[in-house]
Length: 211
Image (cartoon, rainbow, N blue to C red; front, side, top):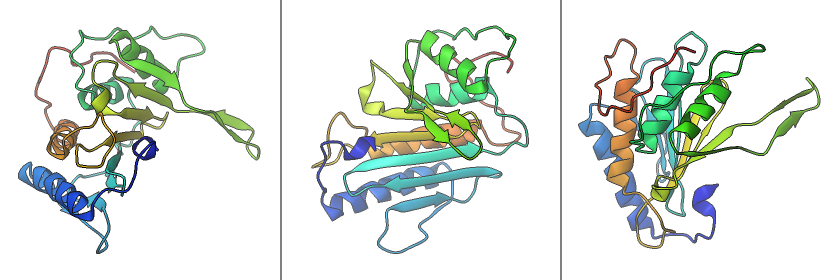
């Protein structure tokens, strides 16, 4: 995990403060959050319809956000790339999506190529093999050369998104992001992907394509 590389435990008081800042930021945006257990740094978003949305804050001062909307449809490369661009605070021009091919590209491939066209660094993670079903799969890993504090985003073909970063608190490894900014990014992504929502055009770099 990114947050654990070269890290040591940080003070409990600083972790408590980070959890409080994230919870307050999400609550201010109208997003309900619960902590299923006492003395844990695990937050579950309960107000997003049809969405898996959970946050873990590690004892090393890192944060892991797992997010996946369940729309009942196949994951869309435009939506996934737009979420990753928001997380990375990418302000590059509108990305170009590769044309459909035969055999067709996967959603992950199209999203990854578009994100690379925006100037983000994209690579494949270590491949995993399933010897029972004889399949091999890998996620794409996305980082920003201009915004290293935004950490790393991993995308799977089912549209699952995992954001790993470090919080800017005493004892945590830098570069790092402020907990309040982490919460603001989460809130922006969630608001823009709620069923029936009309996403505000926050910047001219919003993606446009058909998956």
